[in-house]
Length: 364
Image (cartoon, rainbow, N blue to C red; front, side):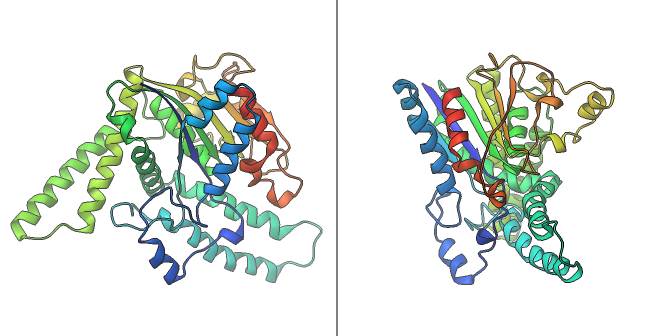
């Protein structure tokens, strides 16, 4: 069976209205809800649905619109306490938004206390940098990578369990990432569609290590007559996440997984190009990063139908064009679009922008 799969990965919003949900009663209420796609004010479901429905409205071909509407749309959440269970509590990424808020309040207040009135919008610019980039810094740390990927990939695997269990499934994959979420989506494409472990680490090695740790804990429990613990649940959940990623990549090896499109919006990927020696060597000598090393070689058709679509705006300081970074070719295309009239919304409005919806609808 053929499946169209669209995966959405957000970045942490710099909007302080969504900054923190530390109220004990709210957390207690949320802990009883285990559906990662649940409707809640602390999810990106509103933005995701606006994006999904907006694109559907602009697809003129009826058969293509039907394909878009009937695709598996996988909404992911990370960075805040949207779900609190032992098994899914991998690392501390679920408290990132709270940490940003608590530190941000003190930092912004310290800045306000020390500078005089200025024509330069100090507060707005520094808030955007603090809340819009600190999540990316956490993600590129080893602990952040493991925690964020664990939570996102668990959600993807849970939603696609039927697809992964179908030995005859063929999947056409579209990944949509915003801000730091674009970096996560980019890394996932690199892992799935190349033979290298670029940005992803050795998952087979991780699987072996987790198997060993699970066996050791099982032996200790048996010897000491201990019951199943939170640590055991986390280890098993981590092992399941790694196994599902390996299974997803095996579908690509068997030519049952193809990349329809990578869509990045408000993305700092060009600014984060120096995460591997391979990229540094290429760029230092005036060359560009090869598309094959990113999993994008031979996937695009023309400028009208590129494989990697990068949407940016010059007034959004966190977004960058990516064409200058990679080999010149038809697989990658930058689109500079008007996103919002309000400069304070310029980094967050990609999900609800009609200009973005029209572009993706045309390319779909």
